[in-house]
Length: 168
Ligand SMILES: [Zn+2]
Image (cartoon, rainbow, N blue to C red):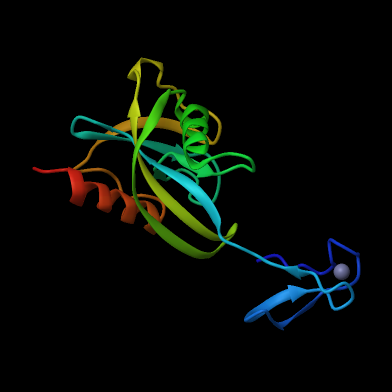
């Protein structure tokens, strides 16, 4: 996690220490507390019959590995808007969020703490599928026999989907 050396309110040097119930960066000069929070992601399950859509990651972490499409929410965006934007950016597909499957917390990643929110998507048409943005490739894999996913949290969200919806 990046150190917050200077106060973004007044420019004085911050202190790291106990305040408001926890150890946090804060400014003793202007008394601003610099709260840090997990970053939410939209992590997408896009099933097609007995298959699931995976993207091959173009960048680290997990470069070259397969994972669920998705990414961080942007400011001013709802969860559903972020999901639909990421879907379009990574796979060129249009669709909508059908339901929230569950969440997974990942701590101390290169991006800090992350709250992954697993969403099941419904795709309008698969015809437009084309890997883009930070995906090298986008492909379908059999739900029963897909490659190991890049992150434990992707694995967990995939398992939530399988346990809930995928009956052999
Ligand atoms: Zn300050």
